[in-house]
Length: 321
Image (cartoon, rainbow, N blue to C red; front, side, top):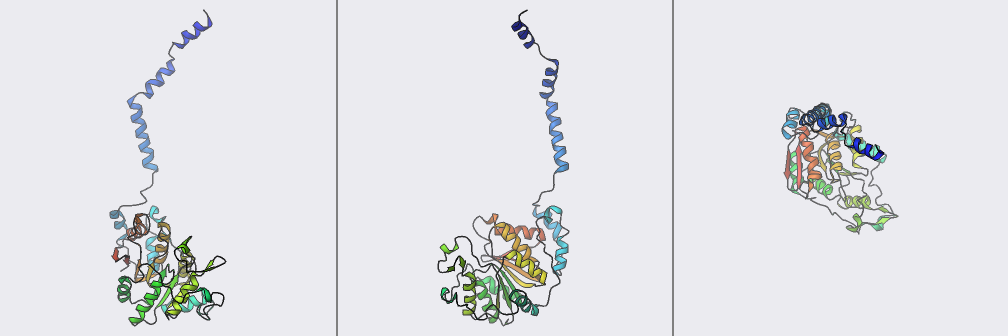
């Protein structure tokens, strides 16, 4: 028999092993068994949903009371592991008295002197406007509503820019007889890439924008230097350090970064500084498409801690009592 005839004969002969494999892989029982194994493995290896429903979250947190900041931190630590991953919990010490906060900040940040002493420095004096209080929602009714309600001794503003809302709050506290209220303004005063396209009047020297100096000029012009202190650093590092110094506040405004990660970090860190019964609020809750930004961060935070989000004009408000 010729070689090509032998090959042809062998090619037409079906291998027993191949027949068995084909029958197995085409059997409905095989696919049913495979599906069951996939379900079994997935069920026992998957973690829980990192975004629990409102009902499940509320059930886990509605019974948490917050008699003190340390109790709030302890209660938060009992959250399920998948929620715990979202927390921002810096180390904090016991709160210091409100009347020591100004001295503490001045000593630790400015060496005991006021940053407004001998202001402005000669090299920036000619680069500043006498007054420029551009802001967004800086005079909303929510400020008067909350200051009248809380009557705060300490206010922390996270995100200040030119100080429009800080000056407005300082004016309101004086009108309400709260002459000793201190407002701590946290901002790195660097703006954001391209912000001078909109605010061309803010000068810069060798790339150093005059935003902090213009803010300070606005405070000086408005005659509220006794009520307002700038903390010119990043919001995350400053809030963490205040917590380590025992600084707390009765009223905290969050109005810095608008993307989710920034807002989420600011809200969680600021919450550790809130005195029992204090109020936290912020702007930009109704920004278009903000289910991916501030509103998402606020709603998730409230869901985790079993708190209620209220609105006042353009602002969100969270009471802790």
